[in-house]
Length: 488
Image (cartoon, rainbow, N blue to C red):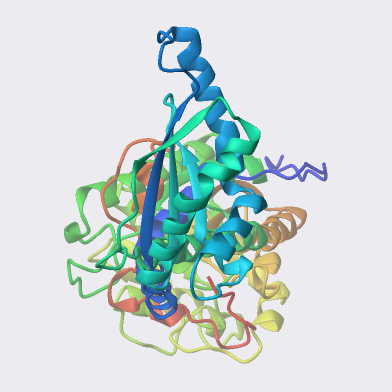
């Protein structure tokens, strides 16, 4: 019985906040560049549009007491409250009209209105009036006119209150320091970063790719056999990253040993021997995963046959650095050679390989022949395990065809690569054709995902570019008959 159960339940909108933050952390360098660029643009705009301004200030003190009255707390509180009233008077139209008539230069009311700003000093009975214009003399003239006319205006409203000038205006010698360029630089940087974060959020929602192994297991309801971390090619291995090469690192090898154990346990419980390995889309690393599973089983003393059934773009021979021959899976199906002649024992790996070195033009038709199933059934009892590397399942039907006579299937899913809809479609196609979905392998897991602390320990750097074969095998470009490669 297959473990996979398709779920058609509609779920509400969910946003993986941690996944989104991880996505942002991967592009931190770009965020810094955007902040710098937009900050510089904001600074330039601020510099170009800024103007020199001059200020002239007048300070007032409110006094409601006569000369013979004592100062009491209630009186001081009253003075503070009245200060707000005087602030209103000094900001009002009556005073500004009086200033316009008194001030030389025939200034308009709008200029005077825009230049005067009045504030009270917190918890005091002091008032500060500031005049700001682009000309020092104009600022001084307006402030001087305020001093000349304010007493008459105040006297009409509060005859018993006194508003005394504490600090008279002076002519400004230098313009005020203008920080608009700095402010606009900060605002520009913030806008740029915010816009990029919104863009990433929209793309994060639209892409609907698998961001981590936990999400993979929950969405597909399939166990994850292992998470293989992304690695740079710093070891300069001559082949793809293989468990047989100790330079790949202890952690890389141990990860595939864990995957091997799970496959062996499944085989012991169910009798499964023939495992096909596929992915939803090309460039997810399925061929290298197939090779490493086979090598891990062989290292454990198992008799293993690795079949390259990706007849559109065979790459097993190149990943294992095997010599090219004209004898492979396709030639056996065509009955151009016998199965005994086509299967080669690679003594270095203690691994049997049935692989083509050149693509064929009609792979689906070849795999659909009755003889293909007969070939697999005929050699089933000769090996402990048969690992079959197939073409991407959501692109062509090859994997679905092989699923009809394979015992079980393993799906390779690369982090943040293939749309979830295509992964689900691939799993459903293989499941419907009879192969048990034993689990998935989450491939190319990044350091940012590991450091989030959600998926177990850190296994070191492994499982990424697979040596000189590029992204999961340069020879796995799948341009031949596979359609369009999804862009990350």
